[in-house]
Image (cartoon, rainbow, N blue to C red; front, side):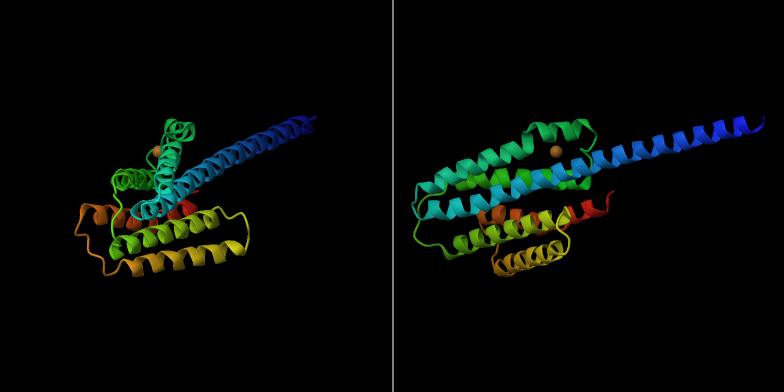
Length: 208
Ligand SMILES: [Cu+2]
């Protein structure tokens, strides 16, 4: 007759452990899901910056499509930074993460730069500006490759993407090496490039 309580307590403890595990799994799923959303928002932002760089170059050349690209970039930036996903993450307590801070720093710098780009006028070739736009695009594309790699969805190829992303960003840094921030415009472009090339998004990988 002693066996029954033993069995009961065993059943109970197995049940408790499995509940606990499924709770952990749920939590992990939730966490992974919001990391994934965060990376996607960050990628939208990176794409917006890449479009800005190209739009601004077209605008300097007097091409009207430049304005279209700049306004589409503005839509993308707004979608990423003030959409329902961002609001939900802040509500869920993720507003203080390093990744979130970095994303908002980048978003704010990108909006500032976009304002300046929108008032660019067609000008005779300005080597510096073209080089800066080129570097900005490279830095954004490099960051985007790295963001995709960080999500770890494609096995070994992620490593190659991460490496090429890094190469693109180093290329961007090399291009701007001799550019001095002697105008507000250059300063704004350089700021976005530096934010893109900074490694903060990598810390996401180890945060869970
Ligand atoms: Cu946020």
